[in-house]
Amino acid sequence: MTVTIVGSQLGDEGKGGIVDLYGDGADVVVRYQGGDNAGHTVVYGDETYKLSLVPSGAVRGKVGVLGNGCVVNPGTLFDELDALRERGLDPDVRVAERAHVILPYHRVLDGIEESEKEDLAAGTTGRGIGPTYEDKAGRRGIRIGDLLDPDVLRDRLEYVVPQKRALFSEVFGGDPDDVDPAGAFDVEALFERYRDYGERLAEEEMTVDCGAFLADHLDAGADVMMEGAQGTSIDIDHGIYPYVTSSNPTAGGAATGTGLAPAIAGDEVVGIVKAYLSRVGTGPLPTELGHVGGQTPEDGGDTSASAEETATYIRDEGGEYGTVTGRPRRVGWLDMPMLRHAARVNGFTGLAVNHIDVLAGLETVKVGHAYDLDGDERLTLPPTTERWGDCDAVYREFDGWPEVDWSDVAASGYDAVPENARTYLEYVSDQLDAPIYAVGVGPGRDETVVLEDPF
Ligand code: IMP
Image 1 (tube, rainbow, N blue to C red):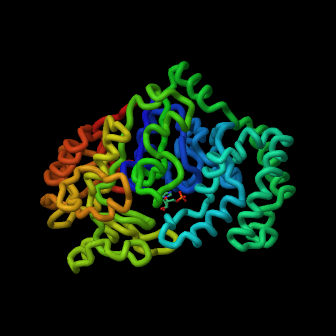
Image 2 (cartoon, protein in one colour):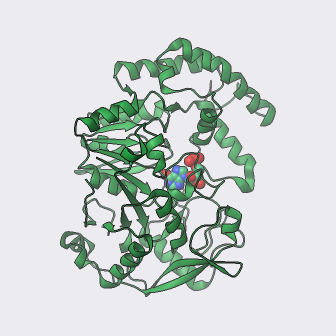
Image 3 (cartoon, rainbow, N blue to C red):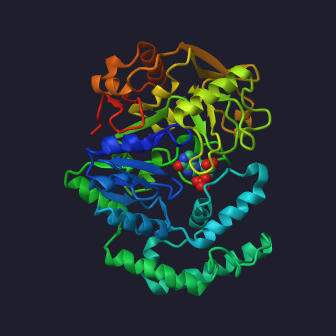
């Protein structure tokens, strides 16, 4: 069978922990979209592994696959594999021949386009994700399979690189021969480096026809986990365009991004919900608490003293500060219209709600139950981001729950979750018409209350 894990909000819902937990029951873990813009931390024994591309299951001896819907930076992939091998692991990772390759010029262009966009900038991760998907859709991309055939690789580079040079110099006013990294716009340098990557992929027998590979495993009785990165509200089609990533994290992506039929790719679809919102990036956020300069829109956020205080509490308890920059992340109350939209788009068969421990100790926990849009009540997202920015949240209040020993709660089971927190969880489950499969009560893999294992 297959289990698909999908972020139901803005990414960073704590998918990694759930993938890790349920991944125990899987034989193969496949990523179906995105690239090294994702980040997941896997704690295995006493060791912590930080990965951005390699599927987390590969740390635990599962077969990890990067599906055709992914964009792959081979340099990142081999760096991560080498680092895992140095630490004594033997990860088995396969890459779809139909997956697209991120080249150095994609990263350069990602950076320069973001700085030109000003108000429209999405605050990208700078990994070249958008420009690579642009080339895929523009039918000028280079695929993993092309790296295995030097003649095809050279032909593709000779066609596309002059266009990228012209774009960089004539539109953006840069010098393509004076960039970091050097050789980002040089056919010969790119050819040699990417041909070498192709040779290594071939030597290590890493490339697969993803759909056929997965179907063979399923026919042989294997269980497959489909691991979504990012989240529904930053989906290119269903998210808050243009403040989105360039792929489909939603459940439909699990079919197109792997080559399995939709009816096979979605046996179970588990929506990962964070008990509050956090956001790195720009765009509206109707339930936002407080204001983060440079990211919260001018007229956005609740800047009352009590909202700023709650925002700081949630940030401190949840560690909502950038890992590199230390900058505060935007935070807000749970947004039910956003979640109802996610439930419809993805067809959740179950939910995992994370981080309820972070809200412990608050006297009152609020939820944006609906929106007021020009005097009308709305229960889901309007289709344009501008109209979303016009929405005012209509709140419901829940009594808060106390700080408790969450490890004990995890060990004892759902009945040990404080009663008011259960009321909150049951409200979410009722509204989304999907049962609670798991409740995250802390960062560790053991700090999860498991009600249902979908495998
Ligand atoms: P990109 O995916 O690097 O093109 O970035 C596009 C938008 O998606 C930006 O707002 C990023 O902050 C956001 N984003 C990309 N990856 C993640 C993620 O893994 N978690 C949360 N946000 C992400």
